Length: 506
Image (cartoon, rainbow, N blue to C red; front, side):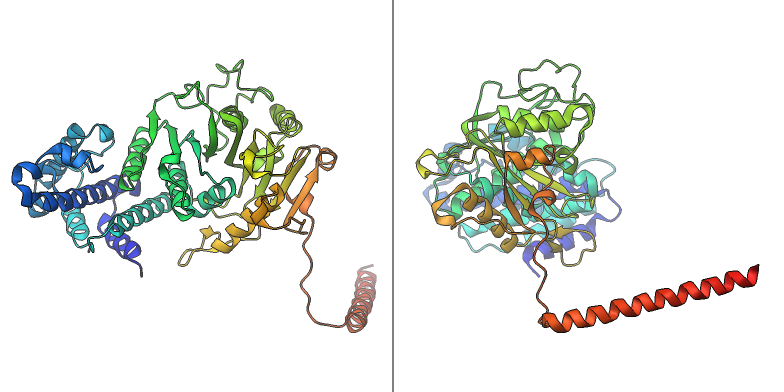
């Protein structure tokens, strides 16, 4: 069992009957304190030989991107007082002290530990548990904390069910979108950033492909204030600098970046939301392809995201399956206008059970501002205007070990989908593209029009080839013919039996 799983199992056992939605702020808040405490203490020990005055110099820490931790908030102080009945209040005060000394964290940290309803034993137990995390004194320590934090978020989202999907997107779905749109250089935007999973995975992509972190600027907006804080802690643990904004109105009603355009947009907006102020926004300039219905925000999100793209921008959007086929309230007309306007680059149908608390399947829309040559003008991608790539991944995925309802895509499956997309775009190192029955199809505008602009991939990719069973055709034909004749004979016998029984009733 990995350290992430071991720690979560132990932490979850302490939760008892406490609601996971509340408990996650307790566990993740203390895990964050453990992280910044470790980083601070390491720098402190390094500076101490130069004198206590140097070790207590705030600027020494800020210069290295390390959060300053006042003495009362240091992990060693909290751990020494872990069994104190007032430990919850001490942790809350530690959070306030850290925020006061670190502008980047103001308003981000939870102050939930001193509540009367929270058993101090839970706080004590978590401090003891996280104190036992062993570090080896290398940068890998912080990668370890990042992995633990991400695992905790994912598990809490799963435990919360449908509500968990409001703040966290399953990692395989995030990885798939990142692998497809490849955020390397430029500006990345997440309009409803939740826990920040797309941003974290984008940073992982940069590292894996040896791109410079400084080449990607990150922006995000969130409506839920506690989720906003969760994301800020998530990014801070990894040293990711981002311009995150919060307001109670939400992105559609009050865009925090009204004059900005982006090279990449990734989003998992809330599905089928009816109270999105559609009546107020009926005349909004963003509705290039048609006014979204007041009772459903799906195409408001889609058009907002498309509007935020720069001249060569590309977006990956998780959306409800109904968005591919709905004809109600003008959604079919908007979808047609998007296809005819060249906004839709690719459609991916996902398997069911990927998302927390629901078996309802979803899909991914890949939107592009310039299909003539894609996002990178120097890449010499092929002209894709007049085409849309359809990928049917509904049969992919397998149950997560130990779960009866949660599925995940494998790395090989993610790679297969992403490679098909890159090959279709004409990327030189992705190989030649070819339609694959049952999996992918590059459909023309004429073919899409024949389907009345319904974008369900299953309509285009067809059925996959049947598995070869090794039985010679002649033998199979003879066997199946004999079976059919036997069934016909049984049918005639049953007809005679029924007629006989009816005759007895006369």
